[in-house]
Amino acid sequence: MAEDNKNDVQAPERVRYSDEDLKEFKVLILAKLEEARKEYDSLRTLINHSASNGTEDTSPTFKVLEEGASSLNKEEVGHLAQRQMKFIQNLEAALGRIENKTYGICRVTGKLIPKERLRLVPHATMSVEGKNMQNK
Image 1 (cartoon, helix red, strand yellow):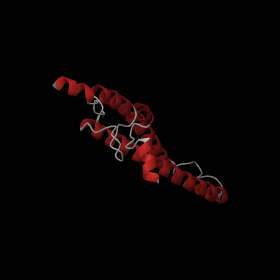
Image 2 (cartoon, one colour):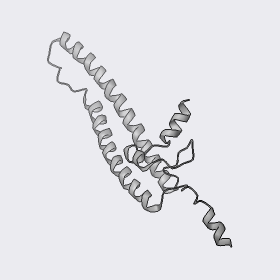
Image 3 (tube, helix red, strand yellow):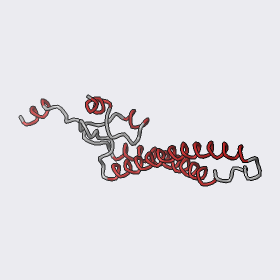
Image 4 (cartoon, one colour):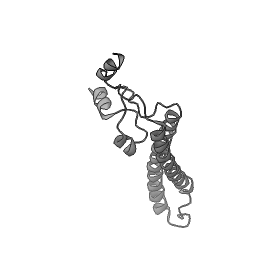
């Protein structure tokens, strides 16, 4: 009789991804992290080396214009570097969630974020449903 009741009860919704799924996401995140760090290093190099733009022997007027453009470019690159660092931090946080096996769980709904979304945005902490609920 206990078996009859077992068949009537629906299987509970998965509350976390399997260890195998988590390994797959970890590989994806590590690859993105490596790429993001290289991009960040490139941006930092641009910022640090943009001072020597070769205008030392040109006319003073050109030098002032060039320094203004260089300053603006340096600011833009600085913003890009900040965004890249935030992305790196988000990816590192995602690795932490993988380690404690909470990766892929929407922080709004508590449901699993679809794999397709996590493959596109591996540092996501909300499902589309959760994001829509939060924006209301």
